[in-house]
Amino acid sequence: MKVFGIYMLAINFITWIAYGVDKYKAKHNHWRIPERTLIGMAALGGFIGAFVGMQTFRHKTKHLKFVIGIPVIAVLWILATIIIYNIYIK
Image (cartoon, rainbow, N blue to C red):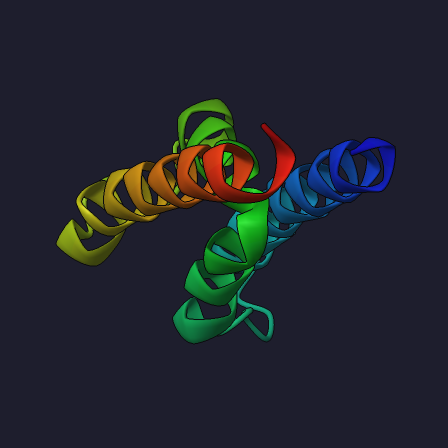
């Protein structure tokens, strides 16, 4: 359980940083982080970092695939966590 918590903290922090870096690069016309990568990081557990990054940096907030996709990923993660907890840990 401790490893899972450390993983979730790390992936969310890294995802938040990635959103900030991509916003910076967008403003300065540099190479961008692909949207697939940003969504993939959320799917790997960084959905909180993605959501907070979207709000903090005002980034990707007009793209439906992010506005709808990130909350859907969050709900799926929460459901999966509840199911796994009830089957294997409880």
